[in-house]
Amino acid sequence: MSEVIVPEVVDAKAEKALYRRITRRLIPYLFLLYIVAYLDRVNVGFAAMDMKRQLHFSDTVYGTGAGMFFLGYALFDLPSSLMLRVVGTRVWIARIMISWGIIAACMMFVSSPNSFYVMRFLLGVGEAGFVPGMLLYLTFWFPSHERARAVAKFMTATSLAGVVGGPLSSALLKLDGVGGLSGWQWLFVAEGIPTVLLGISVLMVLKDGPQQAEWLAPSEKVWLQGELERDRRRYGAKEHHSLADAFKLPAVWLLAGFYIITQIGVYVVNLWMPLMLSALSSGGSADASMIARYSTIPYLLAAIFTVFVGWSSDKWNERQGHLAVCMVLAAAGFCGAALAHSVGVALCAFCLSAIGLWSAMGPFWALTTRKIEGAAAAGGVAMITMIGGFGGFLGPYVTGRLKDATHSYAGGLYGVSALALAAALIVATMRRDKVRI
Image 1 (cartoon, rainbow, N blue to C red):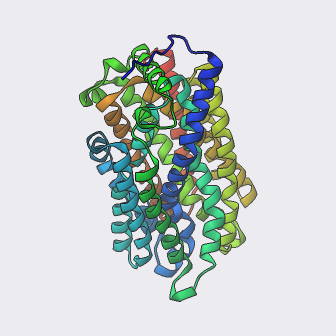
Image 2: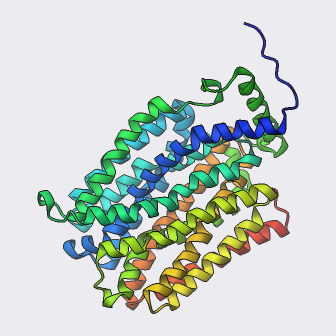
Image 3: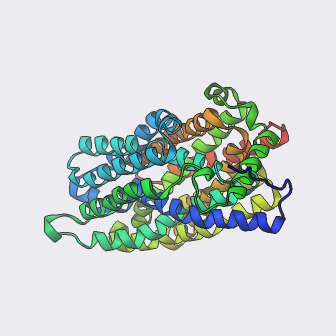
């Protein structure tokens, strides 16, 4: 077999063309996978109004059940992520998607608080490892200076899932009574089955890395592997490659603190925004499908700004300043929502919060995956998402408890606003103290 000769210097135009081709090949498909993941995770927010009424759930029951997903996710995220290194990304992601799709469809059988808690917990167990797996997969293809844009494009799925989920959920909720099922039951089964089918497709579509990609030339594979290796050495990833290293890095713990706050905010928006908007409209008697349509607006704006902030972060190779500004925006939005007395004002406030929270994801994950590789990459990312999972539980749970105790959403919103400012302070402090990240 003849040796492949790769030039040490690749033309900048050819380099950009190669990354564009990789992006076109990978990101749309990964984006689709994440959309269905996010829909199955947060569709309970769209189902909440009808589900609460028919099953007689209190705000505490709903908040606890909505948050139980994140306990299952957090507890099993690390072991599931480490299995990625054992069986391979492609096979394990397929397993994750098939199992959670089945559980998501079975949410239609919820009939009591306990069954709600159990099914949401199992859904989290089924999905555990998906996001770390996707982020780890991107490190196989993109060096850190290209990664924020790739992550941002991938992460826009979480905001566009709200754009897609609003009209889709609205249509499914209108099937109330068809086939003897409630609208919320149709919502769960119709959004769970496609996940199973996409999980099967993963086995045929995804490759475990550039070396298996038949659409790359041999010289491109070698050059890309060398570029990724140089990037790891440049930013210290080669120094931190064991699982234990992930737990020893101070930066990982600081980033985990930042991430848990973002997840509290994200899931207050995802799981409570429809109910909060409903409470402000016509004395809480608004139609669920109409509120679902209103709820798409913050997600649409968040999708646009997520791409822009990811581009800006890569252009200037700057992460912390972008993250701090994003969290200040989120804090202002939550404070505005707490003060709002109309749907329009609350909707504008939630737009600010959504823009800030979702736009932070590109710079955040580019910064995190720049530092570590190997088992440490899987372990570090999983540890951060695991800790973030507890934020996903705390946000919905505490919001429900406070609502039942105070008969107002304001206390919870002010609390999340203060936490967002704390997250901005965390990254500002990291920058000032020159913590190596």
